[in-house]
Structures are given as C-alpha cells and as structure tokens.
Length: 392
Image 1: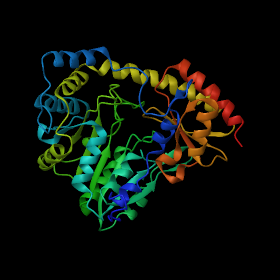
Image 2: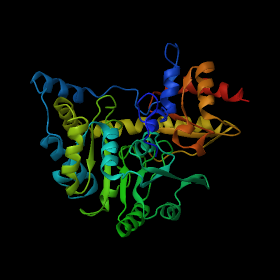
Image 3: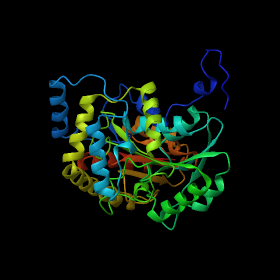
C-alpha cells in the first residue's frame, strides 16, 4: 500500500480510492425528473411511528447530551435480551458495543483487527464499502467469489481456506449477502470457525440482513456457534429490518476483551450515537417484531412479482434469494455494468446499482432493491423491459 503523499498533500492511496459506483449512479441523477430509484438498499416506507415517537419523547425530555462510548446500558441490555431470545445464546453487555450504524461497526472492527500490510479475505460479491474499508486501513485485499452452479450460489470453502496464509488477519463475510441474497449455512460457519480457531484468524461477520430471511425467523448466525473467546466479530444494524437507514445505529457482538478497545475507537471516531436515537433503538427491539413480519411479507410478494417478470425475459438470468431484498440478475451478453446503469438511468429513468460495485466478476449484473410497492415495481420493470429489449 502506497502511503506517499500526492501533490495535494493527501495520502495517495486515499486520492486513488474510487467512489462507490452506486453513488456515481445516484449523483448522475441529480436534477433529473421522473426517476424510479431502486439503487439503495432501503425500504420505501418511513420508520414506523412507534419508533419515531420514542425518539421525539426522548428529545422532549432533553436527552441531547453525550452518551457512553459503548452505548447506553439500557440499549446494550436490550440488545442482549433480543439476541439471546432469537439465538438461544448467553450474550452479556460486555460483548456488546453500540455503533453509529453497521458501517461504523465495520470500520471500528477493521481499525482494531486489519493490520497494515496484512491480508484480509473478503467473500464476493460484496457491498463495496467492505473492501474499501480494508484498503483504507492499508490491508491487502483478497476477494474470493461465491460461484453460480446448478441454479444457486455456492461457496467453495476450500478456496477460502486456500486463500488464507500466515499473514491473514481477518476473513470478512456478509451473510445474508448484499447483493446476491446468498446465506451461509450453520455447517459452513462451523467449518470456517474451526479453521479460524486453529489459525488464529479473525472472522468479521456482517449480519445486518439477519432478520430479512424467508426460510425461517432468522438467518444462520455465528452467534449460535461461537464460544465467548472465539475470534469472531458480528455486526448488526437497525437500518434494514426496522426501516431506520437514516438514523445510523448499529451494534457489535464480540469477545468481552474487545469492548474496551472498541470503546476507545468509538471515542476517537464518533464519541457515540445520540441518546435519543439509542432510545429509538430500544423501542425498535422491544416492539418491532410485528413490523419485521409485515415487512418480510411485503418483500416476499415483491420478490415473487420480480421473479415472474424475470422468467418472462429471454436475456436475464436470475436466482431468487432466500434473504435480503435485492434482485441481483445477470444480463446475457451484457458488459460494463456501470455504463449499462448510466444508460438505463438516462434513457429510461430507472436507477439500478451496477454489478461492478460488488466485484469485477459481476460486470454483467445489475442490482435492484425490491423493498418497494408493487405499483412502483411494476412501473419500473415496464421501463426496464423496454430498455433490455433495445440493449445491443
């Protein structure tokens, strides 16, 4: 990693760090009218009233001062109750650090674990921020793609293990996966955890879509199999399941000896989430189960609608996900996904995320977030179909 200073006086590797291609598409839409945006990973409904009212009451009580770096104790206790209730675990507040979003949690984990010059193995496709974090920290990134085989996404665990070496500091996994919806099984998690124990390699598991899972109440989690001393960091967020993307609130579950380290890093990054936002998080965990069930029902209906549409298209290959709320689809003979996404936006007014954002192997893919209403999805797919038929 080149840490020399460019002519501007800024670190050269930071100057060379690209913007997320997703944001590039969004910026290109500024000032345009009649845009149907499916580019961001968020529901098109506002945060539920009961969560917003909780934050308002907290503000009315004047709860606007600094909060503890690791998070308010009541929120940490509530997170423990929530996690233990879902996973049957015995997580304590010493294992929990509240963060300013899942993104902040991933950055804190990288700051603590990704040694400069060490190798960090990342499963692909991957949300673009995850590889970018490792580069910012000066780690050497090594991507391992999950492959499409027999109509489903498959992880070659042996390839992941073979990619690791004595200089590997961490393996970063996003499961359920953004953008593919692939989900790591408990058996795969156990095998990788066994390897990490033997080699002393950290596992960072981004599980922000854990509750948007269509096969059961929750996706498989490392929390269900790890011991207290295991080198595993699990990241969660309030953004997706509780429709709180703009609030910026998440949490980390990790060995208790990391709490003080994460506390220091929180202090030197953001000090901590606002107390009234943490109060909203407490309410979300305590009262949000009905909202999660209702939301997942809507997502499944939207997924079924998209799947039926995709099956009628000759130029699309699409594997329905078991989790998250994305349609990650391959366009036959498609290439240069960034240019495809720009052209789709320019000519048809539909905003999708380009596949290249999730790894160079996926440059013939586009990602659509179907966490939206059926009428909006129908309108967008009508435009998308016309564009695909005219694609050369």
